[in-house]
Length: 75
Image 1 (cartoon, rainbow, N blue to C red):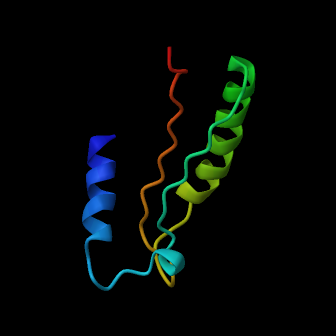
Image 2 (image 1 turned 30 degrees about the horizontal axis):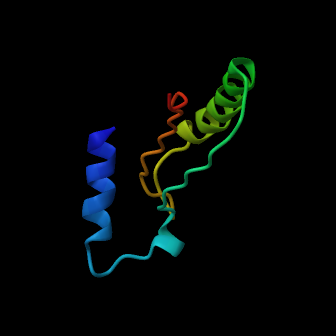
Image 3 (image 1 turned 45 degrees about the vertical axis):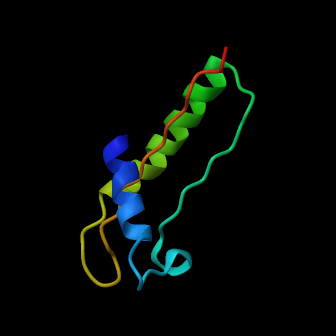
């Protein structure tokens, strides 16, 4: 996790970036969900990502790291 955050930090420190146009970004959304709802969501996201993992490089395709993290509630 820290490696991904460091990679993003280093990217954002560059002068010639285009976050809006290169597919980069970070999104955080507080949600209320049951364990089953989270599991279903991860399965759905996994199915979408699986399709992308089958893509071959070339043309306009560039390598991206895609990371999804869910944290437990704060006590």
